[in-house]
Image (cartoon, rainbow, N blue to C red; front, side):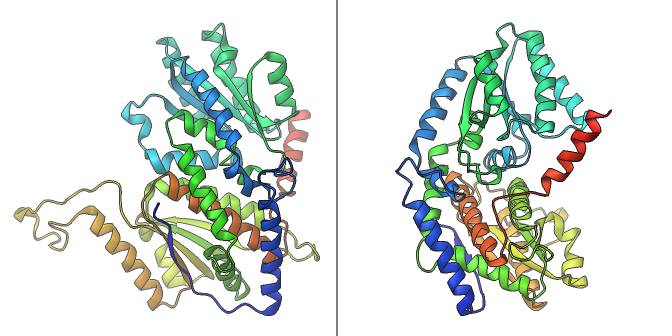
Length: 435
């Protein structure tokens, strides 16, 4: 498999920072050493062992085969945040944004919002399928088993399923923590259930049952996802590696006052990857420091898509010069090629593009953007995917997850919790209780 290449420039770390990085790597190594033991999921770093757990793929494949016998036309993933974003990112990256418009079977839909307009449209689509005797499968994904948005959508969609399927329970797969309220309900109702390792947090769970079941069900090669992720883990445990260099580059930029970290992706189908990364960074780093709660980490993740956002925010980045550090993601070899034919009647419009491929034009825009950033002395790193495939996505996403663990150490925050997210949940529950 071709590996991801990177261009990372960073300052030489101080002795203190070197000590922190060494300490973190020892923790990762100690967790990794448990990967074939019953204790493999006993630490907050447990997610790095998920790609090495063959039992997960075995369980997931067994349920996929079982549910495929039901002749499923459409899969609906009901989840939000870490229960949804990784799956959506990989699906869109590999299948494209217009997958459902190409009459693929099974099609896949995501119920990740309580927006009434979106849900009404989704219900209409699904009900039309059911009326035409097509089967749908609901995969409800929530670690806690109590996420209000997810349960709201599940309530709505299970009622729709009941309306058309007497044996509706066969058409549901639950993914949750063992012994959660949702798990207990599923066991009582004899509904298929997959369990997520307790200490594998949502935003680190894409290579667990959370992502593997829906992705495998629509035909994505989940073994190659795991292979890429495994290689990324092993690379991150070497003495010098791009995971540490990338974390250092972001951290040093942040210490220099560059409080915005923009992920600038030059592939439209990777926009979901950017949204996944935004959650990974925002929830992992945005919080009070461990030893000084009055001081907070405010490293702010943003997302830009090339070339669309060259015509929306590049003026800001290169003209307004906000305190931004950029990570560019480019593609070395595109999976599709489109050639622009030579047409004399159009020569006067733009003679530089005739006879070239769209791929060549996209590459020129990508490297032109980097050249412009250099001239403006903007700080950045570059990751180049050899291709958009399961292996490269597994490698890149696992790299980013481990990089976030190192950044948590450097920024002196806990990268595995999200206590302030509970604030809105508490207020939402209060309002609903007294409504």
